[in-house]
Amino acid sequence: MAFSSRERRARRRRPEAAINVTPLVDVMLVLLIIFMVTAPMLTSGVNVDLPQTSASPVNSDNKPITVSLKSDGSLYLGDEAVNETDLVSRLKQVASNDSGRRVFVRADAHIDYGKVMSTMGVITEGGFTHVALLAQQPQGSR
Image (cartoon, rainbow, N blue to C red; front, top):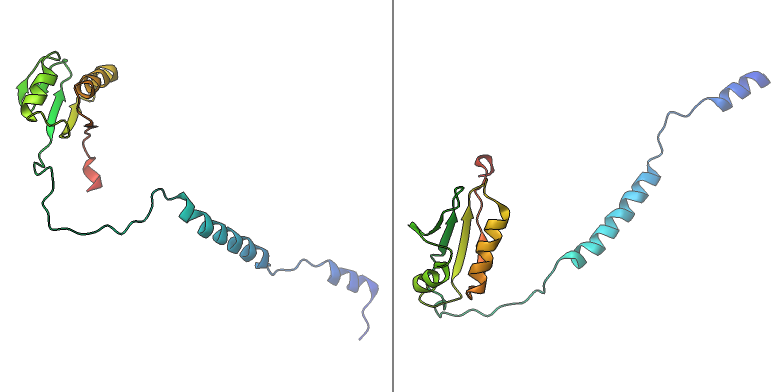
């Protein structure tokens, strides 16, 4: 069976319908190796096998102190209203002069950010080192 030159050219120019996935697999394997090598380097900290003990924790009082700021600017320590000038002395009284106690600062969503930061600054200047902000969890995240 002899093909004419026209038929041979038509057959040579016909596009191939198969997809060559070998380069794609090669690239994906290289990326996988790169991520496997770099992922352990991105973790911060050192793995340490901590010893176990039966001693009770040093700070047995797990209830943190809560400072609240309302949108009208009023300041509360727990449920009691307090002035900003008396805040540190009242905190020390509630914490029994333990500056290691946790202090949570809660603030209204519509309050000035500078007011929240100045209140946290007053607390840390008073010697409390464990000061944190509280936020409400969204309803759908539980």
